[in-house]
Image (cartoon, rainbow, N blue to C red):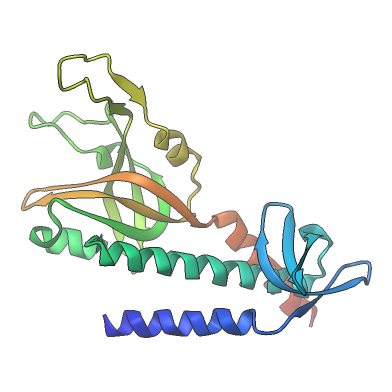
Length: 236
């Protein structure tokens, strides 16, 4: 817990450093704008100078400022994730890892919590099995992830349909498609994600039912930053 607290404090200090003084943003045209990073979308970055917001097109940024923008965005996102994790921990949720679920099922059984990791691939086996050995892939969409420690985890799934309040009362038509199915199928290998859900883990059974998925960093964004940095190194 002490290490987590120190890491959070260090991250806050980094964020404060990033936003401490107005940064001069330079466009490819040579135009320059002073301002603090506020937020960004897919096409624009928002900066603020003396209380006024200014919108800059991301593709117009010079290479150095594009990388600076990526650092600001990542620091802000990590700060948000840490704040969310602190709230969940305070509410009694558990941070899951592959080793924790695999080796200490009694500590996580019937607990809500989250796991940060990378999406690997869809996996019908991850959906689980019935008592007779038949797969549950008709009812669940299973997938594999790599947790934050780099360990493989293959018990994650989202139900393909969600049951309405009248289902248990006998109305078996009270079901609706689970929107998370399309979220999972749109993920790419290497996407960094946060999975939030409920674990059932016994001596011979594991299941992590995912109820929410948050994107931390897409594999495409990570690859783009890596490529730009490599190109800059090569050109020196």
